[in-house]
Length: 258
Image (cartoon, rainbow, N blue to C red; front, side, top):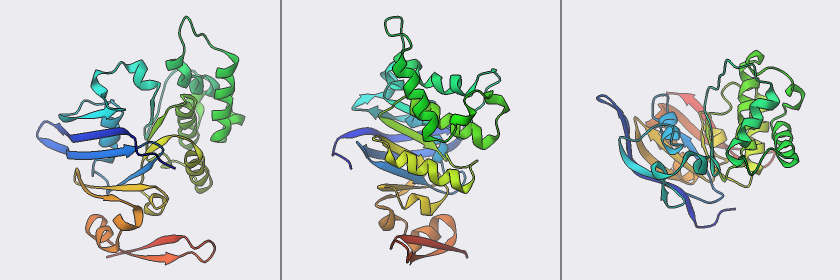
């Protein structure tokens, strides 16, 4: 359920490396409580857009607004109390336990006047349960598999208790069971979510879908209005048509090579 308040937006957002333009003139508005799916072929700019919206890279042009305030003018601690990001790859050479890695998500809320508390421990424990890694809590982060690391990274973001969650293809390294469980856990959260996805059928469960193509925003709207057979063919180079699942009546995209 969304209200009409815009909590994250970007205006004329562009990013270039030397003479290579990776994003050009992106305009987006995301309402409180909304889930926005970002789709596009490899190299279309999905990861770059997530990094710009999370303030991990400076834009070449345009600006990002967080609750109406320019993101670049805000203190990192203030941003981290409102916004968390899960990138495609997370790595560390430190010998951190899984519990300690997830506990890093509480850092923006701690200070000399507000030290670690029982509440923080409870939040971390809940985040571990949400992504099914409680049994790994004593394991060393660097010894985990890629899929396990990704789930722990998502748990760290959940422990941050953000209002806005940015996820860059969070299910890439996960088996199908954990793909579905992670997406279900994210959908249950009372947060605004922006999620870059490869799977167009996963994007159908979002409130809105943005389609990127060669750094440009070429479509934005409700999933079935945006992911039409014509748009899927033009952007992804495959044929598509909708089927209805007899189990629950949900629409499913059937994709075929051109």
